[in-house]
Length: 148
Image 1 (cartoon, rainbow, N blue to C red):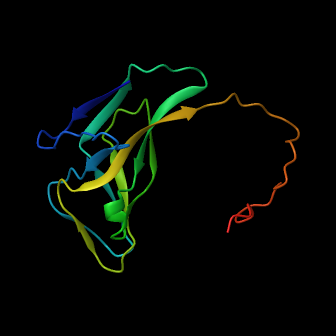
Image 2 (cartoon, helix red, strand yellow):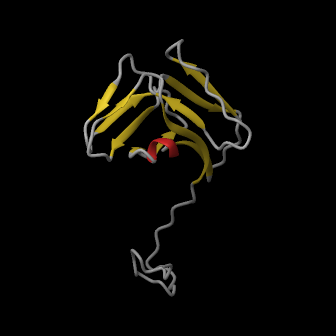
């Protein structure tokens, strides 16, 4: 499989992933610092477009790119919203950042703001049925799995 990248900004550092890393850092492709208000949200462009190529696809298996939080920012109260980038999308990959702090936070141009991870997706055949099989858990929802 190949991850083809088109850089929209020639000044962006080239993305890479070290051995053992699961993803690629996305950076803030902004011209000036961006301040996020307390408990505010900002959508930040990455300055890259991507295409996944040379992978085997079947009717029940595909791929996606997930946008995930970086632990270093999360520890500071800045969380990237988990997002899905479909394999057919060709636009600038953007990240939604939440500021969970009670103070402003400033994102600088080229800051690393999120992780981009390529993941398999299973797409089973959809079958409409009248009933589902019974389980011990049944319809018991949140917190009912017995794990404490």
